[in-house]
Amino acid sequence: MQSNFNGKKVLMRVDFNVPLNAEHQITDDTRIRAAIPSIQKVLDGGGALILMSHLGRPQKKKLDDGSIDVKKFTLNQVTAHLSNLLGLEVKFCPELVGPKASQAAASLQPGEVLLLENTRFEAGESKGDEHLAAELAKLGDFYINDAFGTAHRAHASTAIVAKHFDAANRSFGLLMEKELINADQLIKATAKPFTAIVGGAKVSDKIGLINTLIEKADNIIIGGGMAYTLLAAQGGQIGSSLCETDKLDMARDLLAQAKSKGVQIYLPVDSVVADAFDNEANTKTVNSNEIESGWMGLDIGPEAIETFKKVVLDSKIILWNGPMGVFEMSSFEKGTLSLATAVAEATQQGAFSLIGGGDSVAAINKSGLADQVSYVSTGGGAMLELLEGKELPGVAAIK
Image (cartoon, rainbow, N blue to C red; front, top):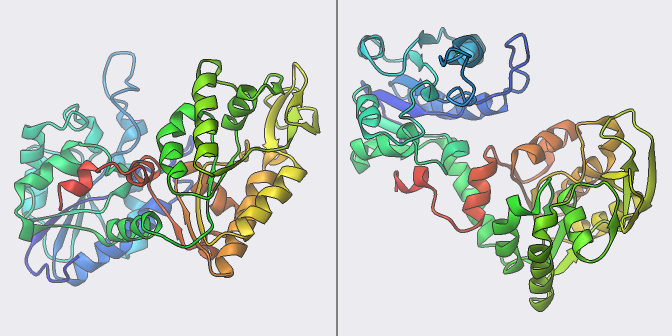
């Protein structure tokens, strides 16, 4: 990212898709804070900054009359917090493109920041609409993409707009550069052992990643709901645990493929099970292959924790994507938080660790250990696709 923006209007795509509570208050500002260095660099370089981002999925959650729920999805909900972080008043425009946006951008002075309305208020955003991208491009002299979290989308504001700026007038932001450098470090890593920790609800969501990891990793630790599909595929009795019954053959193929490549797959030998999906449910610890009907696995058990921790602590490269259980509930957080501690400890011993994926980021933040791992990615889907070897539209457009 260059440092001289003197006299330029800089159009920057950021990722301010932050969680909000019922009172429209930001509950986690990680993504906003991650964009501050790029924003500050433009301002320090003499530029005027026009920011654009999406927030939620307003097109898919319209009001009964078919209109956008502006109150719920307006990006103006982050303006005050961004102003506080920057120490200056951020201007807000209630439209993305149009006469108001054009006038607000034209009148912007060096050192000032303008935040445009939610990109997804425009139906053409997610369709990669050429006309919308062209209208956005008219607002600035220089384009920066610092929204890694949406780099895997060929949207108007993330990929198509970049085509309207020549190579000298478009670039990645500092956050995007960091994301790509750290992903590249993991992809090209040769140190052994390489351990991947993969969790989450469904095997089908992670099939691409697991197939890629089988070609690269020495160990793959699998937890969360997806573990029970794999356990069932091996003939285990998993009670009422989450299971993709239509993916059992695929699960068996995965296990066979890993074995043929000499990759060790670790599944939880024991589980903390509950008689309801509830933090106050009755719980007990049982063998993961012997879960009674009416009981469901919601966390890995103490024996699994010890096994997984030992593997992690012996590793030189660690990728973590997905929790080990329903860590949002205090009764089922121990497995995930124990793994977070192990990853942090391994990192302090010299391992390179990358945390990728929304739930993993939430888990490492909950553990308070985010500053003790090598890198915490801001992009879940984007990081997964990058690690799967896919080309990201938002990256390709800049390159």
